[in-house]
Amino acid sequence: MTASKTPTSPLEHRLQAEVRSLNATVAEHGICPRANPAAWFAAGLTRRRARLLCQPCPVRTACLRAAVIEEALVIRTVGGSVHSLHGARGGLTGPARAPLVKEVLDAIADDEASRTAEAARGAA
Ligand code: SF4
Image 1 (tube, rainbow, N blue to C red):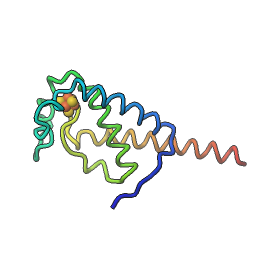
Image 2 (tube, rainbow, N blue to C red):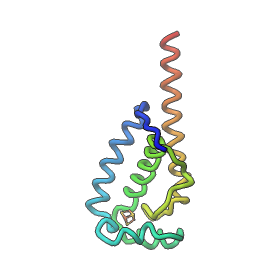
Image 3 (cartoon, helix red, strand yellow):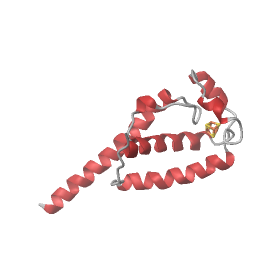
């Protein structure tokens, strides 16, 4: 069950550009793209294990930001929930990223709401 949704928020467009740039950095310098990525998505991954896996990586901050944005955009476009996030990214497990992903989703929703309100005021 997938429901495609065209991005409507200018913030969402900016985030898409940001995540493309961050992912290019992560692909080039991250350690897991060159290691055995299965370890980062192992069943029963703990917060401690996620932190240890990513600790030596030079692009942890960029990776975490990319993960959080990407996961928020996926939830908006194909559905899903912050409760289904999994795998270690940027040193955090899915459940540990969930509040950060929710912040991005809320920011996009706020941006959309303010644009809609502006448009309604303009039309009045
Ligand atoms: S921070 Fe972790 S998940 Fe991200 S690229 Fe580095 S090792 Fe991979």
